[in-house]
Each structure stands twice: as structure tokens, then as C-alpha cells.
Length: 119
Picture: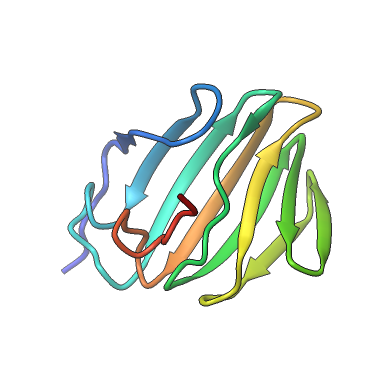
């Protein structure tokens, strides 16, 4: 039977400035462990610690530019573009130049226990 998701849950975020995370599907809002889907609103100047997650992340930028740093270089993902990052690879997300809005899909679902942030 289908399950309607009427509203997202706002998730606490980590980073240098307040970022709004609205989880539609995932461990918190729908009790889904296989996959999470969240809409992010990151202000200009936001960045979070690096991480080596235990999940793949599929990101579609809707507005602005998302900076994705890896050990091999940095990608500037602009509105209308997407990026896939893979579990076990170090990454660091930021929005240094402008307010940015994007959708993040994690497989399996995002969890603070499996993001493995740098200390």
C-alpha cells in the first residue's frame, strides 16, 4: 500500500552556519532505512566537516552552486547539474559563493552514525 508523506521533518545540521534540511523520506520522517531523500537549503559561506560515509549520495542542485571537495580535486556543481559520491570515499560539501538549494538522495538512508565525519 502506498504511504503518503504529507510533510518533511526538519533535521539538525552540522556546519559553520545554519542550514535547513527537510527529510521527506528516511530514517526520521518515514522510518525508511533503504533510502533517504532530503531537500537542503544552504546559505552562502556554509561548510561542513569532511566525511567518509557508508552510503552513496546522489545530489541534484536546484539553485546556486554546491562545492564538493574530494581527495583528487573539487567539483563546482551548478543549478541543473548533479553529482554522485560513493561510500568509502572522503568528501566535503560547502556553499562558499551563494545560497544553494539541492536534493540529496542517500542509499542506504543517511544516518549520523554512518556519515563518519572528520573530528
